[in-house]
Length: 104
Image (cartoon, rainbow, N blue to C red):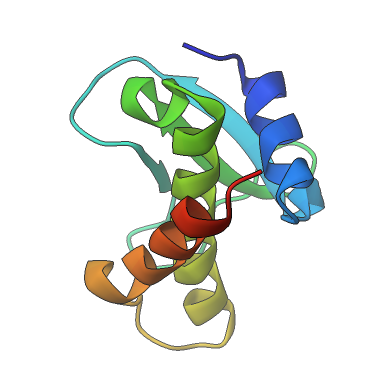
């Protein structure tokens, strides 16, 4: 398992601007990660004002898993910030698949 710092470094190495996210960790294997939202759908921001992105054990198994998870969640964030409904999982998963092909 990698650390949150290593996850950030892997994401940045693969072209993701991590200034948008504040990463957190939650133990568990029932998901790779998630963005936090209020009941009304607004994105929850951390103490730094950045969007909270929580990575779980599967999302921290490797740098590649972390980058795929961050890319996936970034698609959800984009749709929320545009005022759209959260993208379906299949649509967001396209970003994870792209990272899989081009991971450095």
